[in-house]
Length: 478
Ligand code: FAD
Image (cartoon, rainbow, N blue to C red):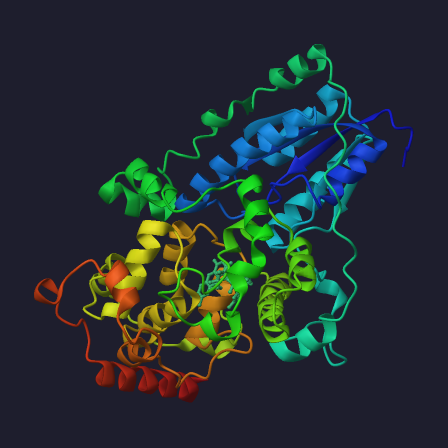
């Protein structure tokens, strides 16, 4: 590796839209100057590459990239935008710019890993050095294993094995660089896939399911509604982190209260898009002296649930389509479009479910307790396959994540690792009494009044019984 300080490195940004605690960027600056690129990736015929962004994440990415572009510009680093097949674009750019090396932050879903591996081989064959860096996780998934297997299937032993590990220090923002020549930048813009951010079509809302959902109300209207609730971008993310003590003060007791806007941190989209690294969050939690020991420990534990989701996703390549517990291949799910439509639209007649689905639609986020209850209702009371719910969340959540989303859906549906026992069918009325006793959450989000309420879609007792029978049926066939 050259350390002349004169090299030019291409840093490929993906889900790491930040400049501080960015190992690839820091290493590239240590070697010399940097040119950066972000690609709206298209999957190839074999399905390699990241899962295409859902509607809410497309909006978030657009806004966050605007801020990243400005921040990198302040450091003298140009950020290029491109759309298409990463394997072509990265190789083309590396050649036409004459860079010495290409660096990126590692990603862990199997189809992305496979693509990155291919790109690395092609680049190496053409004489470029490639470095992949840690940054999205605290625990590399291949570094934690019990004695009996190459991975953990249960959270607590995983957490006990990794929670005490040294994760290193948060890296500062790199130093600004002297400007790159105009000739070089013109060469970058000659690459046909390179375009302006607006050209990427992230705000079009025309693809995948959110397109479908948004089509009903107009994609721009929908994205504008979400926009009223968030400030994407690394600057707002860092401000949010500065306020960590205020946002997770009392976490142990408030984390299950969905009406309390500050009951949880709402940092999930920041992690999803990499505006903050998990190490920055961990360090902030460890060093914020005003937190109680219990609040601090409880919140840090949640960060490790995310790590566990990625650990599973790494070890189960088809986690978004196949059950971890194979007997669930035989689960007799029903196929009921009408039930699914009511669930998505928040017209099931159960206030907690409908308020949750409205919060999701209007803000791109839903409180964790309500995510669990709405997911249980869809998969158990309505007996719909968890895929459908997972896909709806994928399209509508600003934090839709290739690990946390399928893993959590499988957890609720009972087919996942360390899943909730199947008989744990959340009763939405009891959950409402317990976690929203004053109806504060319902009043914030419920789209109807008692007079205009739709009739309950199913009877809770009967549908629970039907779910348990379906489970028995599956067990008998396995
Ligand atoms: P906080 O309570 O402040 O927690 C801090 C961070 O810890 C979160 O940002 C998140 O990264 C992590 N975390 C917290 N709870 C969990 C959990 N149960 N599992 C894994 N990580 C956790 N989370 C996503 O980030 N993306 C998803 O697509 C997603 N889909 C979900 C789908 C279902 C059906 C369910 C039940 C949960 C899902 N979650 C998902 C997990 C969880 O609901 C969110 O991470 C959490 O609500 C985010 O809010 P917060 O940032 O305020 O969390």
